[in-house]
Image (cartoon, rainbow, N blue to C red; front, side):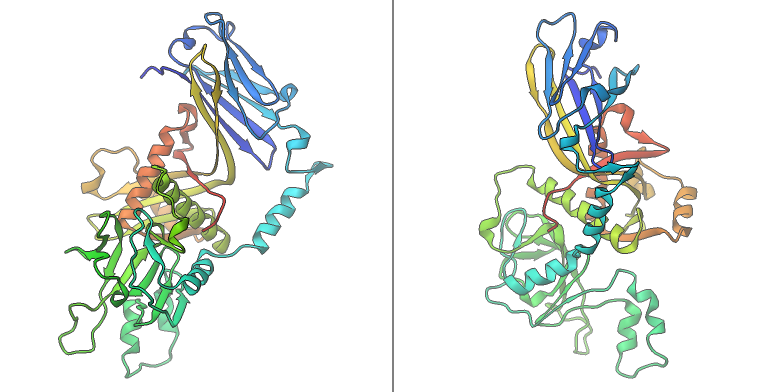
Length: 422
């Protein structure tokens, strides 16, 4: 498909203090050979000039200062892309290099480790502070009834905690605790709230009137906007009938709810849901990477075998700034958007009835190899969240220049990262 405008994509690698630039030319400009096009690198912009146009195409870069004399690796690819790398000015660099040793970067990374606070701890503090102020992130619907108070707010252990419960006791108990441990479920009673890595657990009796609707397949939906909030987990009843009709536990996904003052929520930005979801995934991967010292993940959807998504994710850069913009020759200066992202590699494996000829699949051999590797960390996400994650990764891959979309058998993608970890 021919491009109607030229596109610039640049990656700022802070640890190296360098900017890698890819300019994808439009179908008109690409007719000119590389010798006839002129590229000027200035401290704060990139200028593209062709013989056909009197006016240049200017990509303005905000917040950085380039050193034009350090431009290197200039190439013109057959796909119509121009690539090169340039260093940043010393004044704009966040690192100090002395005798070939990067000093400030190591100190910054060490500070990040010592000041790291998990999302669980942050969410526990939020629930303690705001108690009943839980809202649907999409529309602002209040989810819990007014003035409900949680007497106990506890962080949950990791997802695989039940694999080691057979080591907790040396004998069987008569009070039924062993049966609960065998099921691998920790469910809150009235007055309790459990906080996991990706969800919150709260007794269903705390749901506000006409705020949460439960579907036939136990999905918890917002009654105002119809968005999925989570699921209804079955809870054992005390009577002889097994499960009571209104007994249960709400499992609410963290990216679907907002805890705090409703005045802080804004609904004007149409892309806020997408950005919030990407930020949620970014923080989750960074947090799990720091906690388990791993950069590779196997992410699986927790659902039935015939509706299963498995994804291999490999973190490449958790502190990357990208610049994106597009425009036509002769239109003068073009606004270039600056975004903070994490960069990753991924492969997805879908169940047979979901694949439908999609190319984002991974062979069983590669997946088995990662499964046996102790340095690979496993994560479990709800099916809807895993499906949305896969769609987001594929969409962001398509935003990259063709030459950067594939690396060593993996697809390349990114996830947006906002400033606040919460």
